[in-house]
Length: 166
Image 1 (cartoon, rainbow, N blue to C red):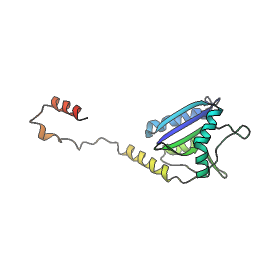
Image 2: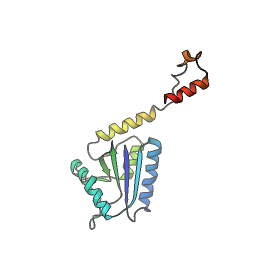
Image 3: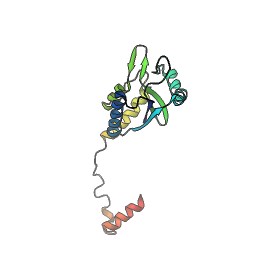
Image 4: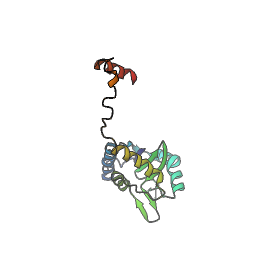
C-alpha cells in the first residue's frame, strides 16, 4: 500500500497540512505503510492529477473531488494506491457525507477504514498490514536447528556459510 499526499502551491505551511504530515509520519512508522509527499503542485500538475487519477476514481466510486468553486483548484489530496493501482482518494464527499484526510488517517491508526464507497479492497490490504504487525514477534523455533552440523563446523564457519546462503 502507498499513500501519496499532494499539496497545492501556497498550502504547504497551513495548519491542516502540518497536522496531516504528522499523521502520515505516524502511519508510516507504526503501520509501515509507504508514504510519498509532493509539495507545491501547480495548476498544470493539478489538471494532470485530475485527468490521470482523480476523475476515474470519482466516476467509478461516485465520490466528489474536493476543489474550489471558482478556480477549480484542488485542496490537498491523499491518494491510496494498492499494488501500484489508485483505489481511492481523500477528502471524499458523497451526497452530504464527507471524510477528510485527517479522519481517514486517524481511523487507519485505529485499524478502521473510513470510506464512502465499497471498501473491501482497502480493508483486505489493511488487515494484511495489521496482521503482519501483530505477528512480528521474536520466535525461537530455530533453536537447535543446526545441531547435526555441530561436529562438522565451528560457529565461525557456520556464520560464513550463512552469509553464502543469503
